[in-house]
Length: 304
Picture 1: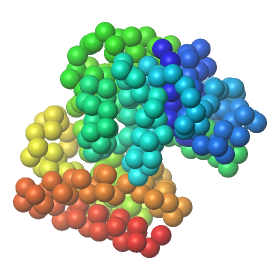
Picture 2: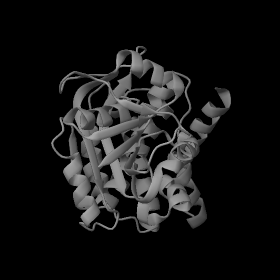
Picture 3: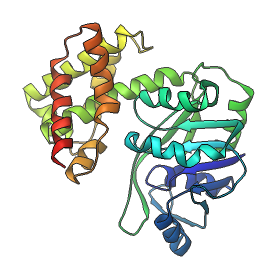
């Protein structure tokens, strides 16, 4: 299968690189500066799962190319519209679009442009970053990508994709229930990013403070109540399950949104927390912790 990875950053560069390392037909859609960098030094991955330097195929937006079989999309939500414009011309009749964004709002935006049948479900768990030299640095065990039909169907096209994605040094797996997995990750990310950005601390010190732990629990409860209101397919004991997961996180663990704030970068306030808050307000659900988190993020956005 011909695979187009939109961007060659910390996430797309890692998973796209592992597919290229395996021998798949991978092309990276990048900006001019990143193309120059990749042409000069290659795609460098430094990982506890194995280092590799690759010479990837790259294209710039607008460059002529035939439609791709799969488009792997890992941009931030606030870059989504620009990303859509950049890869729109490479979407053909049979193209699958696999987004790895957090949250759910991007599915509406992608569906409005390309149609629901082209969009499959995807998410990833990875701690990676792009250093100043353009190297992809991946330094933890987490390197998991899940994908699947949002209906849960084991379609012919999804099984073909599973064949292309198998056998890499990353954990790229077909999910039997990607739609539920997406909502579960949304709950975890919204809670983790919300509480760490609000209190400006890693998760460990927040857990240690009784009122901090209570805030985590209350935020989980609020978001679950919003998700249940719209019949999201979340597990019955998901609050307990995710609190246990949060308890297992490293003491100095920070959310990626928190790290972005520390660098004065943009955040996904509306895409993650704003989307949930809009539902809560519409349905008359009281969510005071979520309200405070959203206010904190929006004030931050005004100040950068």
